[in-house]
Amino acid sequence: MPSKQRVSYFYQPDVGHFYYGPSHPMKPHRLKLTHHLILSYNLYRHMECYRPHPASVGEMTSFHTDEYVQFLHKIHPDNLRHYQAGMAKFNVGEYTDCPVFDGLYEFTSLYTGASLDGAVQLNNGDTDIAVNWSGGLHHAKKSEASGFCYINDIVLAILELLRVHARVLYIDIDVHHGDGVEEAFYCTDRVMTFSLHKYGDFFPGTGHSRDVGAREGSGFSVNAPLTSGMTDESYIALFTPVLEKIMGVYQPGAIVLQCGADSLAGDRLGCFNLSLKGHAACVKTVKSYRVPTLVLGGGGYTIRNVARCWAYETSILLDREIENQIPYNDYYEYYAPDYELHLQPEIARENLNTEGSLTAVRDDLLRQLNDLKGAPSVQMMEVPPSFVISKHSGSSSNSDRNLIEGDNTHGSTGNASQDEHPDDMEIDIRDTSANGKTKRGDGERRQHDGELYDDDDDNTDLPRAGKKDKEKDKEKVKERRYLMSDDKGESNTKTASSSNT
Image (tube, rainbow, N blue to C red; front, top):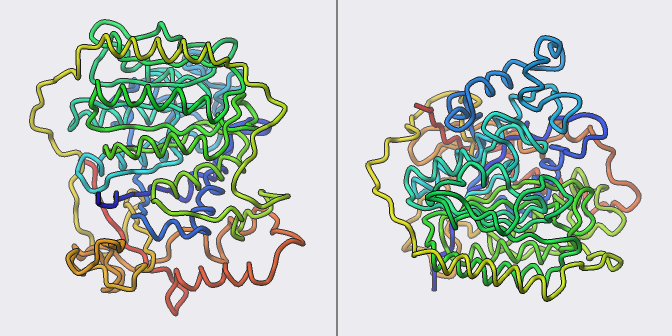
């Protein structure tokens, strides 16, 4: 029986507080909804949870130009008149889809740092699956913002993975083509990109099946151009055999999976008709190959459905079944009127992808993959360290990765050896003793900003659930707060600190 895959979850509490502006479809607030579902379903207890470090200018410029990153660092809504030329040059500002808003640079550094931390953990062998739902902004270019994306955290994470792995596979199930990632690696065989997307009169207008790469990368860009109304059955029938062929031919050392939720039924900008189960079937298929995987978010503009999707896919990654009835949480009213997890596809939406057209796309892609001459090789050299792990006694900085401690599911102590556990029991490797210290002795006991506390601002920025609330639901919330706190009302939090060198 194969061992259970280790899952790490990266979340920065401030990442959901940013605001693109009125009527803008991108809502970072969706990340808070997602996180609260993960908490209310108790999924956080079954994975290692970290607060990531904010990415530095130096980390961002490993792909993006210095001029562009410095521009993002300096600009804010109060000084726009001084940067008119820069806004035109970098496709940022009022008349683009990438507005300037308060905290723009901080927002990009938070979601980018989380993706980099996930990639570093995978490289170090500290986890099997790293999850960052705030990442996946796949349209950003080397020196240009595009499609609500400013910094391409995916490209930066792949570059980090390439330090250790000879080949990385990027998979994109967003309704939009992952043009920024494909463009970055279009001329190399060390990264294969596989994207299923709406093609035609639809942003960004790229991703035809004839776009296969160039020079050394010829054949390593795999595009499945689709049209409106894709159903679960059609999507899976295309995704599964093509991915199977890719895994056999390319043999990647790591996978980056972008799980854009705008391919779901009922999305504000999307035009596919997938259910949560259809979308998550792709995640489950990727997971089954047991290759180190970085799982990222992406698009998704009906935010209650985005939260549903990513919470459900978190449960898939953890092999945990969760009930369809959404537990009471601080954003419970968003899920009215049924308060259920799963979506029903839109009956009225016609699937314009015919069986013949899908067969033609699948055959074209399989033919393209058959023409590849096996997995490309690369001469690997000794990898310099990305992060030096240091021990801290005392308070941690904002760049610390804070581990959210959950109870040991089986009631055993975290420092018990693996041999003491039966094979069918989940092993909690977290040390639940020593006043919140980690096994290395660093870390401290402190309140975690995990949004389960009465004084949290998130508890007041939305109206509470209405008449449908029941006393027992509120009691469950109180019980969760009690389980996460000690008798002084402070959460037991472990800190894994790292300094970037």
